[in-house]
Image (cartoon, rainbow, N blue to C red):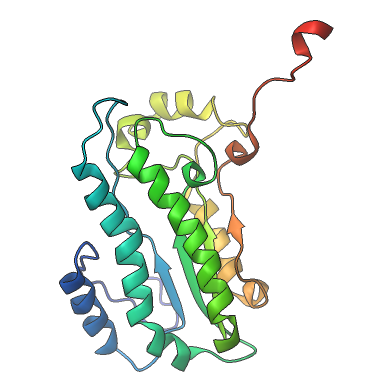
Length: 218
């Protein structure tokens, strides 16, 4: 609001980890207007434990927030999204997946990786089903970014640099990397795009093993 841009921003808390929390969040949105132009499903939780020690309860919590909550919130906001959609300017849904949902990477976060694979697949299903209603559904598949979830590995410059060395483009993601994707998907450039998965991962999405003939040729 201090920037003096058109419109205003309001913040309020929500919990997509339960059906009651989703209903309360939907009611808050409905109280603020009769249409919705952009829905970004960014809420997520993770759980890490070594294979052989990964607990059963880690699945219910992670899948509940990352998949069930995302789907239920989107479903219940469809009336507002439909009201905000036009043929030339569709309503936009952007779901945040993960490169771990695209690549076979567990890294001790098995339920998280599986939930993000579900987010990506679900985004494509909804894109197909909602295109005729003027609603686009796309997904982001980020790599390492600085956040509370990744604080253990990105909390200071030293650890960020270490993580960045394992990223093909040589660094962790920045806020503007996600912001740029959102501007594209939610602006004119994304008006004719649905069912896409944008790999905001610095190239991790195309990492593979070494050349199979490398040793023979060296």
